[in-house]
Image (tube, rainbow, N blue to C red):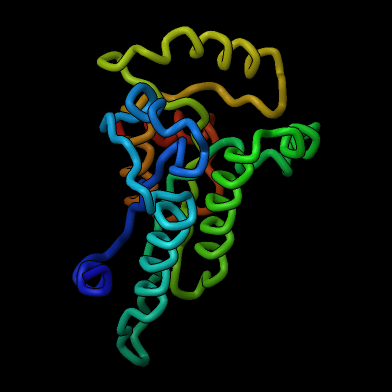
Length: 200
């Protein structure tokens, strides 16, 4: 069970998600954009796959048995969110958020709900929220045409488009963020790249 796994371990990484849920009308595109080439089942919504699974983990961490009078640090909970979840925090992001397709708004609502829940208990949870934009790797090049577009827009300062990150950058950043107790809060692409270097 989730509770048993949380009780037996010192940290949690939540990277469960899908880009196109069963209600998006775009589920077949998951074969292209998903690293696992999966196709969502009929109950695979953003709420069930992203929010509920994360909330189950967060609840287990909050209720984890802690020894009284013992000084134990908060449990690191690392969550792979999305750069677009931060749109309300950047210039013109609110406007982009309002015109986003309905499926993307639901996707981001689930990500934001998890971010808020992870950040709500600093006494028991050290929240580390990774916000990658497009994630890619050299062995899965179907997104290759989009990479230079994202990177160019980010480089010229478009505030609501972040530079892409590789799977390697993200995974090394997660490990570094797990090991370094000073890492907390939102990690955009620049912080992920710095954490990757820290990992070695």
